[in-house]
Image 1 (tube, rainbow, N blue to C red):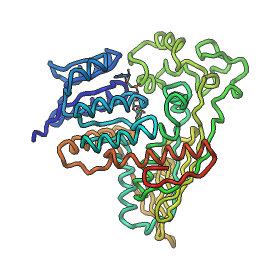
Image 2: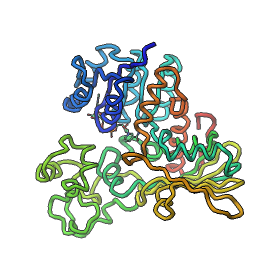
Image 3: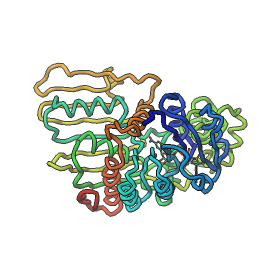
Image 4: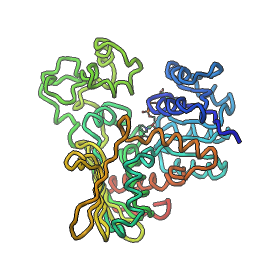
Length: 416
Ligand SMILES: NC(=O)c1ccc[n+]([C@@H]2O[C@H](COP(=O)([O-])OP(=O)(O)OC[C@H]3O[C@@H](n4cnc5c(N)ncnc54)[C@H](O)[C@@H]3O)[C@@H](O)[C@H]2O)c1
C-alpha cells in the first residue's frame, strides 16, 4: 500500500487552510488534489499550496460531491452545523476523513455519524488537536505513570481570553448558540475531551451553571454607537475597540475572517463599517455565555470541576492524587518558570517541566495531521479516532442540558 495519500479539502477557511499547509509541507505523505469553498479565492489558496498542476477547485459542494471520490481522504473543515450533511456525503463516497470538531451540531447527529462510520468502516479522526499537543501529552504521561498515585479529584479551567471571546463568541461565528451550537459544545468539547482522556475513565454525571455577564447592552459606555468606527466616546480606552483590527495587534485574528491579510488600515476600517467584527461588543445580538462552571463525576468516583471564563487566558489544571499533586498551565510558567509542576505529598522540591513549542501556540495541529497520515496507513494510535471523541461530545451536550435545566444529568455510556 502506497504511503503517499491524496487529500481533498472541503471548507478552506482558517482551519482547512491550516491543515492543508501542514499537508503541503509533507509531500512524502500527502498530495493535495482538490478543494471546495464557495469563496473561490479560498479554494484557490489551497490550490496554490498544492504545487499540483491537475489540482481541482470547486465553489459548489454539489459539484464537488458529484465528481465522486477525488482523493484517499477528505478534510471536512466547514462550519459545525454543516458537518452532519457533509459527513453523510463523504462517507457515502468512501472517503477516510479528518473532521473538524464539533462532530455535529446536535447529539442525535453525532450519534448518527458514529453509526454510519461503524457501517462504512471509514477511518475518521476528529480534530481534537490538543490531545496531540506536547503540554497535554506530558500531563497524560505523568498521570498514567502513577507519579501522583491514584487520581482522586481535579480542577480545570479554560480562559477563552477576552479579545478571543469578543472576536469569536460576541461578534463572530459562534455568538448565538441557538443558531449554531451551545458554548459548552463549540468551545468546551475540547475541554471535555481532554478531561475524559486525562482522567482515562468514562464520565457518569455532570452539573453545570453559566450565563452571560459582561457583553450586554447594560454595560455599554454612555453614548457608544453600534459600531466602533462611528466615533465612540470610549474608543481610546475601550479594550474591545474594533479599530484594533486595522493595526498590528488585531491582524492575527483579522486574518481568520478577512481574506486580504495585507489590506491597508483604511481598507480594513471600510470593512469594519459593514462587518460583524466592527460592532460594539456591548451592542451585539450575542447570547453565548462568558462564564460557566461544571461539576463532573467519573467512573470509580473521581470528581472534578471545570471553569470556562472569558476573563483569563489558557488552560490550567490541578490533579490531586494519593501520592502528589500535578499542576500545569501558563500562569504556573509566569510565576514559577515551569509549565508543569509535580509536587509529592510531604514536602520536597516539586519536579518542574518546561514545555517549549517551536513557533509558539499549542503545537498540536501538525502532529494531528501526521497522526491522520499514520491512521490512513493503518498504524494510528487511535488517540482522536471518532469513537474516542463521541463520548466527550456526549459530556459536553449533557453539561449544556444541565446548565439549561438546572438539574444534574446522569450519563450512561453515550446516552443521557
Ligand atoms: N480544532 C480546533 O482547535 C478548532 C479551532 C477553531 C475552529 N474549529 C472548527 O473548525 C471549523 C471551521 O472553522 P473556521 O474557523 O475554519 O471557519 P471559517 O469560516 O474560517 O471556515 C469555514 C469555511 O467553510 C466554507 N464553506 C461554507 N459553506 C461551504 C460549503 N457548503 N462547502 C464548502 N465550504 C463551505 C466557508 O466559506 C469558509 O471558508 C468549525 O467547525 C470550527 O468549530 C476548530
